[in-house]
Image 1 (cartoon, helix red, strand yellow):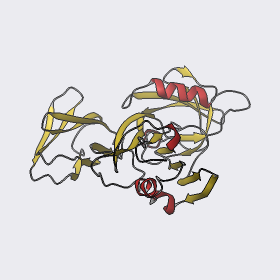
Image 2 (cartoon, helix red, strand yellow):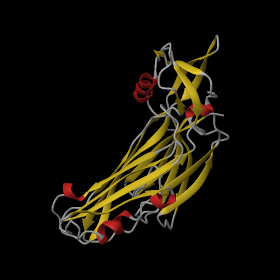
Image 3 (cartoon, one colour):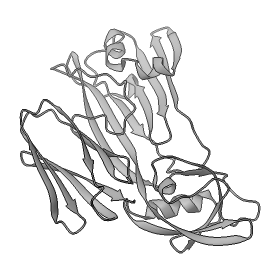
Image 4 (cartoon, helix red, strand yellow):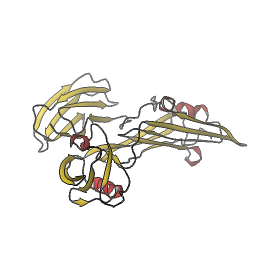
Length: 303
């Protein structure tokens, strides 16, 4: 591998969308290095070692090798990041430093885990409900079975996956629930789960940052708000490479401004808590304006 190659590490956020087998926090990275005679090094990192692995430094220290591959996954119940790198699939580019491009988006997420298919093919058995999700806020419990999602009959997890993905983040949906011989409905708000793509490449100027975080928004500019849905308090974290003043706004779903705050002397990271306790149940828009750029997130309030 030569430094003239465009060295790119792409990290794909892979979503299970709250269906399938339950996963705890799992972190794994596998590294393979080759010279002209073949493989010279192979190792795996797990847990904290995988999270703290400095990918850019390792790439730079081993760019004399013929080939370098890095593959891994960083998972928890609310986000999954898949790591891939293969120096053989790079384009030609000159540069000694390593920079990165990051793209993040949210996808609809309900927040339940369960069996793939019932024997009678009628519904999905809930085995676990993930805290702070729409399913948890709706009071869905382990042992219940979801048979309909907003009027759509559910026979198995793939059908529930399709129904969740067809909805919008912040939508309120009706779930038909069965337990033993009883059938009833529960109202849930569709939450969100992150998809993150991080691209590392050789460039002329150094951009220092390590891949030690497993957050949804590992990027130069990011806006996160959690939990979502919330019962009152919303924790907001905004990161940006700009030092321009930040305007924080909260609006209702109709666009009416209910709160505005200006932060001067911005140092790249703004953390604040906003309390919606006095507001009525519903969807609210949190926005950050910095210069001409505006970043927004929907927050669902369920008391």
